[in-house]
Image (cartoon, rainbow, N blue to C red; front, side, top):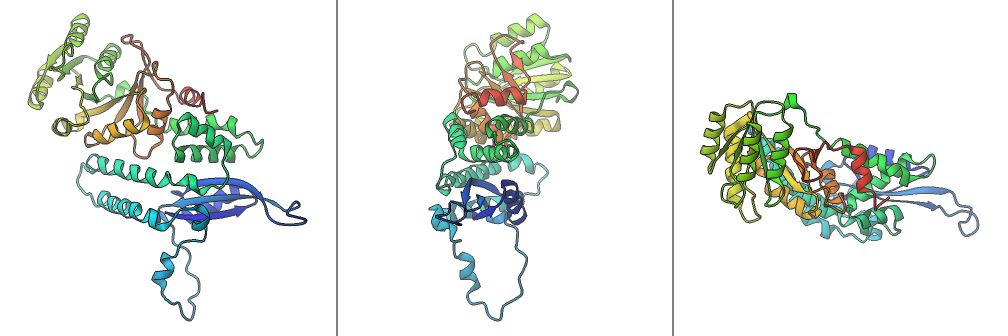
Length: 397
């Protein structure tokens, strides 16, 4: 990661210089106001903004070439010399080089994919890249000699370091006129979340929806709620045939509402049951998959591949799960290329920050539904960015 320190009269000017020199992928690592030496003991110095930013070296914009000097010894060595700010930041190039090398290798692997299903096939690699990026960014706290109290509040609430710093930096830019960054923070978070939401639309519903997730995430209840809200002719297929009580609730719901229902124990059986039900829409309730069941994920991936473009995958996650565990679940199901997320147990979660961290990560699927209770089908809500931001910042703001 290339890290550089900027000084400017205003924060907007400093950020503009960052974007101009480092490009749109640059990360703001820290900001602070300082006085440049002047007058007696610096008391009459001019106040300026000091900003530290960084960018992956792959995304670093090449600087305009200066006039060639008469002689330039050992250019390769000059390229490897760390910027003087490295000493101030306490981060060494030796610490970052192994991570950057792995990040570049993964990026080349993803860019080299040319198959038609490359977006789905590369999902696991992209998740790994995002994890490496977060590992590099976790070094960022060392970059700021002075703490930002608003960032500290965000970190105490559970926001990841890069997300907290980025959100606060943008809030401070927007609050330059009145200086109330805390008031601007909710709007900043709501706008970012809005880009990560995918409200459901009946006119764009896929013929087959595979509802997947870890054991106990709430898949069966989610299927029941979706079935209760559907307007189109519907059928339900469940593969959760080995769990005690996995079939009966959906069978009872289907009987009550006059919905086609079938069970299936294999990929071939799922395909056959879908063909026989002949419904306009099919919801497939899949069995929960644990951490040590890669074969089960591979089987679901084959099912999606056989269903082709008519299939959609919705990954169900619990809002009570820690952010790192949510990311682990996303990596586990990455071979399926989930199209959307359903966050359940929102009513049981003390905070939604873990879900917020996941949504703010690069490459995370958008959020489509919130499970806000146990009532079927009422307690399935469309996420609203302002309400989500308010809930997430209840402790932080």
